[in-house]
Length: 259
Image 1 (cartoon, rainbow, N blue to C red):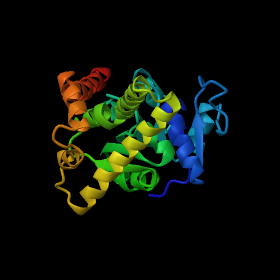
Image 2 (image 1 turned 135 degrees about the horizontal axis):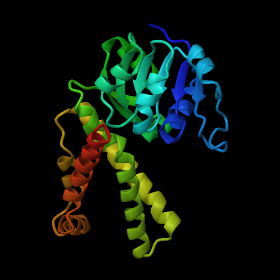
Image 3 (image 1 turned 180 degrees about the vertical axis):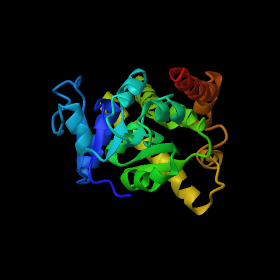
């Protein structure tokens, strides 16, 4: 089914990112968020009346806080096609809260959709899958999930992941400053290093889907050299364990939000 106008309920960080990404592609989009700071609403078309908003929007992207999901859905006046971004809120709760006949899909995008480099996992009513992919594929990698519980894993990995990557970039830059570079020099080098490393791995995976990051890591690691010395420090300080633990804890937190 073709949806002519997309309505975004909740236009904060994620809802706003989705709004601006769709708007940049000339997609007809409207927002509703009575609590939004006017400064953040700049450039958005917002409807102030909830009933009018519902009449104008064919498909809703629900980007409110998890605690507000059920209340928002119960206030809908007619069945809707709904894509929910709310962490931890499963399709059973979404369906039981929305008007009978509504179609629901859980999605978990991430903030890089703003620059067309997002990552998104989804699960729910398959009738909405084609529309979902039409909306998000130009701005995000989209992964169809076989089990709903995997949406929480996506939340912990790619949903929260940009924050981990940004913290890593910050730490790289701080290491550069500690070694004599200016902060601006160190930050630019850190950003390019992360982008380059990711793109290098992506290219290798295109040629060979079985490529492991370890293979490329070994190409820049010489015996007794600088890289192995740095890697030893990462291992000594339990860097791999910390990252794995962060993803697992964020996944657990997503599940907790649904209880």
